[in-house]
Length: 517
Ligand code: KIV
Ligand code: ZN
Image (cartoon, rainbow, N blue to C red; front, top):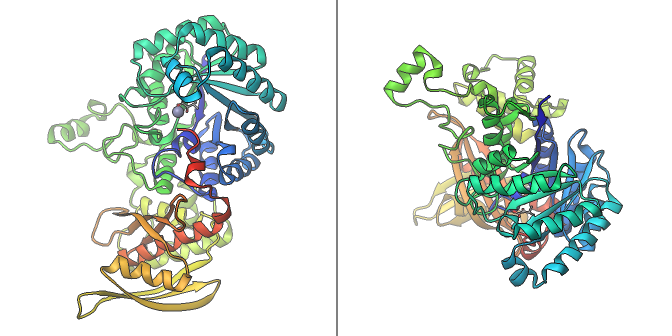
């Protein structure tokens, strides 16, 4: 019998804490549904007490999850724990995750608490959590720089108080694999199956995956990780790297298995980069753009003779179907389109399907080859359910004799058309100004990225913007897709505005969302 390693995904909590990775509620729900499809055992859906938006997102995710356990983080404070338990209440399977720092430096300077006070606080937090939820995880923040004797003392105490999972974070990504192995072995022997030992690594030295794998070898039975390795500073352990290491090196990990469906790795990675606007570096293991690209002649020659000369993973194992990248065309019908959407993992209702199909047909008129990635973008856009208060109708940008740019813009607000124009110092400037004039909201553009969805002169332009609509509140992300880059820009800005309007009352002050790093 193989030991199942539980996969605890924290993309929605630790991942979302990485600069620029904030997501709105609809996007979080969409991602949680995809994570469940991927097969993760536990979804850390957020930190309920950190903001009303986080609370709402966790609670909505708790309502829709069928199999995965839904978890909220909470400091070792009564109010945090009670708030977490309320947020996860609708879930079929739920967990409260409470933590307190245990390293000398954190206890002295951050908590300003003595070690025995920390133990007391931990016991009281776990006891309260246990009275509200059967499944309780306790984390010793900065465990890997803590005294091992102290760790044993506090773990012993929280096991008696009811903790069922004990998480050992390398919060600052400081440890080397052999050191992590030693720590986990000693704690695992000490705990002696009274609770599950979990590992949570950060990637400051690029060792998060290696450290997590070493922890498995030494007794950890849960790995905490994120998609694309998203997370604080250099990120968290990357889910796809750990999973594909276990699968590819079955010889080494023969005693272990996970519940992950590896075919969902690529779609999940793509969804996370689409939502956050953060693409993995091109040479990122498993999901980077170049992870399966063979450029040199010698490699290409080897690949043609036998793929295994240079490929240790079959791309289709992670859901990349290289042979079917060129798909539907101008003459494809609705049924074929629906079929393809299903293959790509999108389940649409009739309205969504109609809208997506219309967009596909319009695209066919201006673009010769339609690729899977084009379709993923169209379908992704259609399955994001943020109320579209504003919609772009028409845009015209021209250069005036003064050298200034002028945008004439027409927008629908709930089916009524409004139009206006504005001058600006460039095309983007005047487009955004004209939208501000129509909507009555003043956005500050914090980030602007444009990329092509596929290759070719007629490729779709994808624009991702980050816009701040209120000072001292987090910026909202917007996405726009169009053959024309300027129209994609206008759509992205309007999508950020719609996102802002849908969660205006739920956005905490910047300070509020940064309670824990
Ligand atoms: O890095 C860390 O220590 C954490 C804990 C809250 C688990 O994220
Ligand atoms: Zn962390």
